[in-house]
Amino acid sequence: MSNSKPLKNSAICEACAAKLSDSFKVDYPIELHIHHHHHYDGYDNAEKGRNEKCYSPHHNSSVKSYESKDNNGKKIKIDRVKEKKLPSYPGDNNIAKAYFEFEAFRLEFIKKWCARASFKESRKDGDIRPVVLLRTNKTLNELKADIDTDKRLLAILAEDPERFSPKATKFRPIADPFKGVTKVSVSQPTAINSRTKSKTKVLRALGRLVDRLDHTVLTTSTPYSIDALAIASKEYQSIKDDPEETYRVRTYGYTDTCVYLAQNGSTQVKLRIPLTGMFILDLDGICIVVIQDKLDPKLAIKSYPVSPINYSTTSKGLLYRQSDIDAYNKLKKLK
Image (cartoon, rainbow, N blue to C red; front, side, top):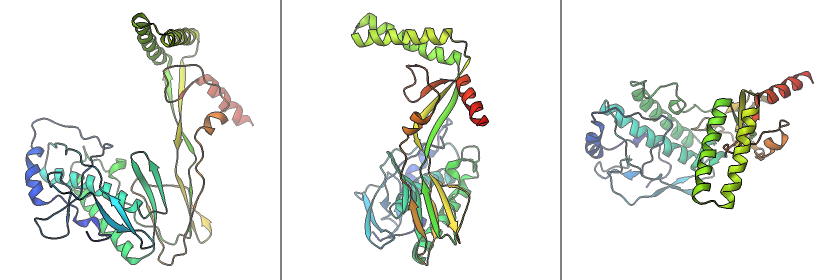
């Protein structure tokens, strides 16, 4: 396949669209979750006799990857995303085909630009949020073509705002490149998910755990289950006797990616990198990228001065009394 082609020809081909048409016609509503990603393989469209990618799994091919180039012109191999069954969609066929094409396009777009990025956020399910320096007119034009494709597909999906809301994060357009940037600073501080939980819900979850452990002790009676039941029962009674009515669960282990853009020596307000990435126009090659070391999320647990309470059901997080947190926040304001 040719190198570094824009994704403007990434639609499902007519032959495969015809095969898929039956799956669009269903007699029952299916909710499409806007955060769920459907993966497809990319295939050559042999029927049309030109270099166009068809993303329908109905198109059989052994193509699993293709070549592109990084910012230094070095050839790199980009693996195709895995194939999954296409979902049914109750509605207009044009919107259905646009949705399938949008899903495939966005996955391919992020994968392609992450391969050229100066920075990218790595996750278990793949890289996202690339920061890319555009140093040639060729890469700039390629991005423009991708943006045009994205706008075209989003315009079609916007015809059904109930399922594809333009306000949803997933359907935000790809951002235009920033201009005049001389320095990009990337930091990855720790992030915490925090939510309140009523005493009733805390006891309900712990009570279910006690019931399960009690059943396990009756059937197997292992030393581990006996000890676990004793601990959970003690925790349940302790929280039940506690006058606290509101608790807070703090889940650690996250990191937040922040970017600062400097223009002519002045630092702008902190920005978040969109899922589809951030692009910097740097045809003169003067922009530098500084990436700070990633902080260990476990440090947030050690540095937080409020002590958690014992609560066996929070596998991801720690449980705190809300009154203890309020007292700490009040004391912090006085200092």
